[in-house]
Amino acid sequence: MRPDAWWGVRVRVARLTRAMRRWSRARREAPFAELQRIESDPAYRALFFAELAAAITDREAEREAVVHAIEAAADRLRRLAGAGERGRAAGEQGWAGGVGDGEARGVGGRGGRAG
Image 1 (cartoon, helix red, strand yellow):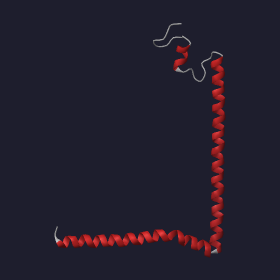
Image 2 (cartoon, helix red, strand yellow):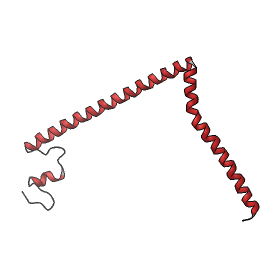
Image 3 (cartoon, helix red, strand yellow):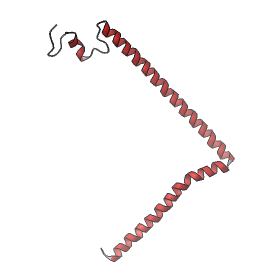
Image 4 (cartoon, one colour):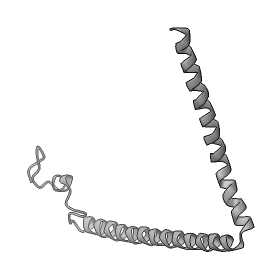
């Protein structure tokens, strides 16, 4: 590579390095600027805390809705499992009459015993 080509690479690398330093510094300082504004501006502080309280309330409502949905699904599953166990004890097919149910009782089936 020619010496003047290296010079272009060095200049570009130096520019990129400076740009990354500025970008990195701005990224580090952004959260602190927000905190300083919250501490120094009473109106902004009130707005921030109102929005924070609303976000916490929304998240709690979403969490409760998920918990209720999970509890309802668990109750349905327990009822289905209980109905399936009672049905099998009485000689019924149970859940949905799975593939092995008929064969287990000797009724038809592929390669099973005839009944």
